[in-house]
Length: 357
Image (cartoon, rainbow, N blue to C red; front, top):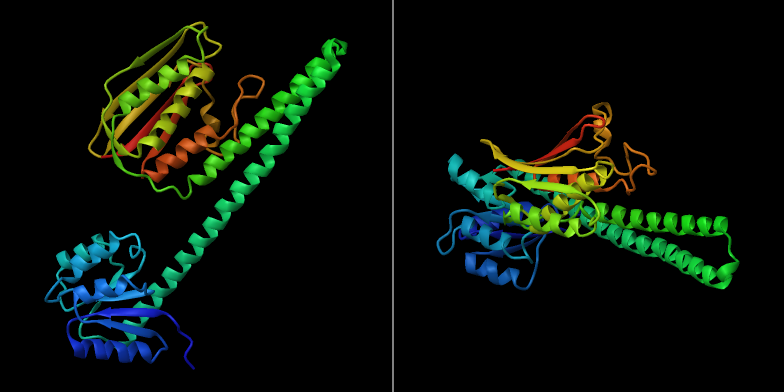
């Protein structure tokens, strides 16, 4: 009984190879389409998207490697798994095929069992990826709905408190006024926490748009914006020469903003806050360091720093949602980099960002 319903496009300029492939695949219940040239394959994909492409590397009009690159650069076809069919076994050709987006290869002449095993494996992987993408999309929609639904009551609470204040007017005493202010404060903190948690959840799916980033410019501009919120404080800011890094400008700015905001917050009890940003380059990484003379932390608990809602200081000492550093860590992971922290209690902290060269 045929139980496989996947659709497979075989691209090969040798009719006998197509016929043999078709016989093998149809025997397992797959629906098979054929293209005897690169141009025919491109035209076919304009109308229909198969579940898998079996692609010959050596063809007369357009090589399989060129076709693979075309397919992977097209948003409509970029997610279709491609298995190369080849008699060419040089490591350079095989490596080039993988670098262009191919997922596997089958050597000609085909061994039926190997051929079918590779087809089955990559169809299963593709199906799992599609299911995971659909689940992630559902999760994002759910998070968005939950975020909206949870924030709304807190906004209403704040509005009701303001209405109550106006209704009471001068009748309210100091204790009642303090209690209402506390309710507003806690409500606002909870709403912000929900927003930060939603921002963190989105990091799972964001694909960074990589380009060269002038991190020195971002750092200076970000500090200038944050400084305007602390006009009554004495803050010394020193930014040395910083190397350009490869990353997503928007996400990198979010990293710098979180780390500088942390430095400003945890130096709030210093008569003179000192924040220093420096850069260096090694054979493998470009490193950005942000150092402050603030409250610091006990290295015994450093592993908690980058976990969601984990805080090393009480809310009474320093306000915060407990998500900022977790967000920094997630963004650096999305850049195939990392963040490290070093600190000593009451002697400041230093955060190092490692970007790959």
